[in-house]
Length: 330
Ligand code: NDP
Image (cartoon, rainbow, N blue to C red; front, side, top):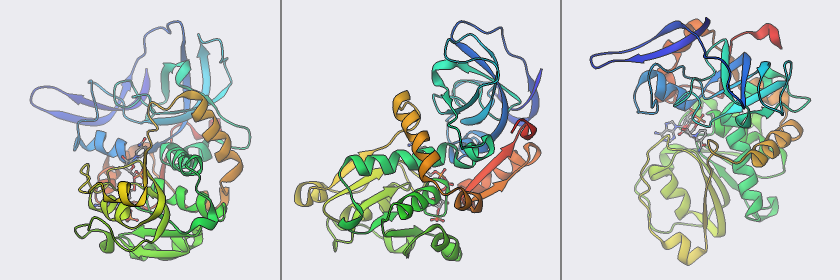
């Protein structure tokens, strides 16, 4: 039996509490992992609070990511003692997740943790940071370069936004950090933001086209914020859209696409093919300033995870929240 956070549901009631889980014997291709660190991501907050139906089966152990050490393997690529990281694949939604002492998943879902990243750092990065890296790679693949103009990052003080701001600034991009948390301006400047934009400026009804401001964008907000960002892109600008912190809607027009040749590139981390995951983690190992990463991190013990989750939905979280599960593992 392993300690875990458990979400249970029957016809009358939904309960979330610390509990214990037991796993079946490993099948071919499966790997059992002793979890060292996990995290709280926006999606985990949705799962724990039940404010969006991200959990597809009950009982569920939430936690869309974890870093740990292989305990037992029936997958050719892994052996006991390997350091691994997992992001997505429906873990914490359809399959028991990382907020537990033990995780049991398909070996194909794991990524070997690159040398140079500790398991704690891997979860300081977490799914938010890995998604930020995918967004930066998407902008690069679309041809964006630092001399083309400023890049805007929305939800900048959150997990994806903090890592995206840090990565882009380190690559020489001038980053405009959009935030609703103006008290975090100092934090964002320390991560490398060149300018701070009040989120309120991007929350009014978007015109089809507005003054050209940005060559690139990483958007975690969706909704009116993304509609405004699209209307303000420079000619042939590119937007990597990964989130819905403001809204699932997109109240825009085709004007930015047909009159300015703007590219809207969707970024999904959950089902992202393995070679792209490995490439993103390798880039994080070399490109991310680990001292800046440390400035983003707050540690929340397992006992406090459930009461911390609602803060994500109020936008009341700075950077990354990591959860020590068995931190003595490394
Ligand atoms: P966080 O909660 O850490 O950060 C989200 C940030 O968005 C907040 O800190 C806040 O930043 C801003 N925000 C909050 N409310 C609003 C609002 N109403 N309008 C505009 N901005 C708002 O979440 P993450 O960074 O981990 O995730 C961000 C989004 O990306 C979420 O929607 C998440 O589901 C999605 N996501 C998608 C992935 C994918 O694979 N596509 C993977 C990971 C995350 P500030 O105060 O600075 O404005």
